[in-house]
Length: 278
Ligand code: OGA
Ligand code: NI
Image 1 (cartoon, rainbow, N blue to C red):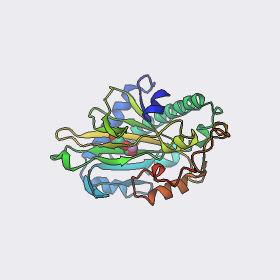
Image 2: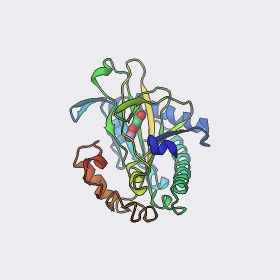
Image 3: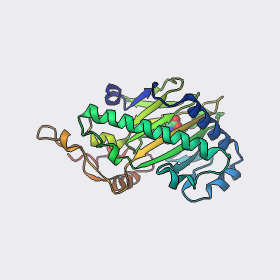
Image 4: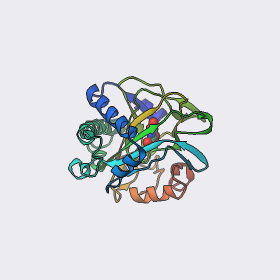
C-alpha cells in the first residue's frame, strides 16, 4: 500500500501464477510478433482485436518504436473467438494466462479495498472489463531518438504488467525518470487513474514510459482491469467528508476517457485541471 501511495507501482512476487503459465504466454506472444507483419495484420482483420502495428511511427512529435496488439479478455468465452488463430496455440495459452491474471487482479483490488477501508467487493464490482495489450519493442539502432511508449498514465483500475527479461520501463517520480528494476518472475502492478479517483487521491497513478534498447528486443504483456463504459467513477463516499472534500469530479468511465482523449492520446488528463473538482 505504501508503494502505491508513493510510486503508483509495486512489484508482486508471491503471486500464485505458475511460472509455466507466464513463460508459455510470453513465448506465444513472441511467436506472434515474429510472424511477418502482413500475417499479423491478416489475423487482426477479425473484429474484436486490433493490430496497432508498425514498429516505427510518430505520436505527439515523438518517434515511437513498438508493435502492439490489443484484445478483450473478459468474459473469456465471448472474447476468445476474436483472438488470433495463429500461432495455433495462442488462444489456449493466453486464455490460461488471462484467467490467472484476472484472479490475481481481483485479489489485489480486494487488498486495496481493505487498505482504503472500502466495503468488501467495492472495486471488484467495477472490474467488469479486462483487456490485454502485448507489446514488442524491437532493438533500436538509435535509442536516443525514439521511445517505446511515450509518457502516460493508465486509464484503468489496475494494470498488471509482465515485463519478460528486458528492462525499459521508467516511472516519473518527483520530476525524474526512474528505471524499474526487473525482478524475475514478478508482475508489476500499476495503479490506474480510476483508483486514484476512487481513493480520492490517497493512491496515485504514476506517469510512465518505455525507452528502447539498442541490442535486445523487449516483449511485454499488459492486462488492464477496467470498469464498464457507463460505470460512474467518483471518490468513494466513505473517504469523503467535510475535512476531506472530493478532489475529483464524478463521471462515467467513458466520459473520463473521452475527456482524456481531448488532451491527446497519452496525455495525463488528471493533471490538466478538468478532473479535480476544486
Ligand atoms: C502500457 C504500458 C509498459 C510496457 O501498455 O500501458 O505502460 O513495458 N506498457 O510495455
Ligand atoms: Ni502504461
